[in-house]
Image (cartoon, rainbow, N blue to C red; front, side):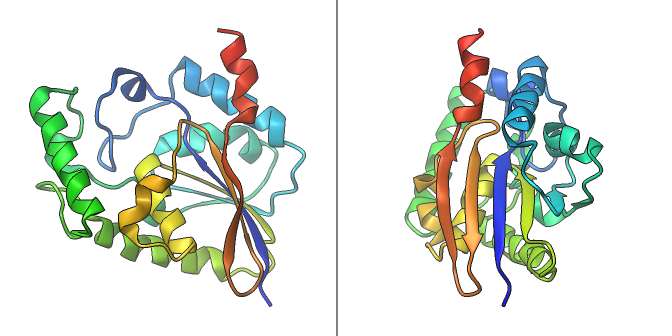
Length: 210
């Protein structure tokens, strides 16, 4: 029987995060100074966990967020299925009245169960679900990997947690997050269970030092 513990984190802060600029799957940004500090905070808090494997998205901000663990020699694998949802024509845009209204409308669509709604050139939650399920098949196909670290992205993280806990994707916003927050999820051979919800304790020292 496969049993696993998944430590699932969102990447650290980028300058686009700080400025409210839309990233998504098509924008491959680096961590900024605060993001690098968050990565160090997370490493200090969890460096003694015996991770068997690390899975990251194809975007470099996820690898930069957990690079200290990779530097320990822990094997890692990039899965594009863990990439952020693609926001299409809005990627790289600073917030404006128009795109804020567009985002508000698409969030309402998703909340109403219209999960095939997407921006031009972007992805719908249903499309992201397909590639996330493929990524999870890879992750779950290795029973020898008992403790796994996964670094991914905000909207994608919310969708994945819905999939793992059998919630409708329309409930994605019930999973809050910030940069480098942790969700710890166990799998007992039958079902996934969130045992650590939106944990940001490791970031408190960082905030206190500001």
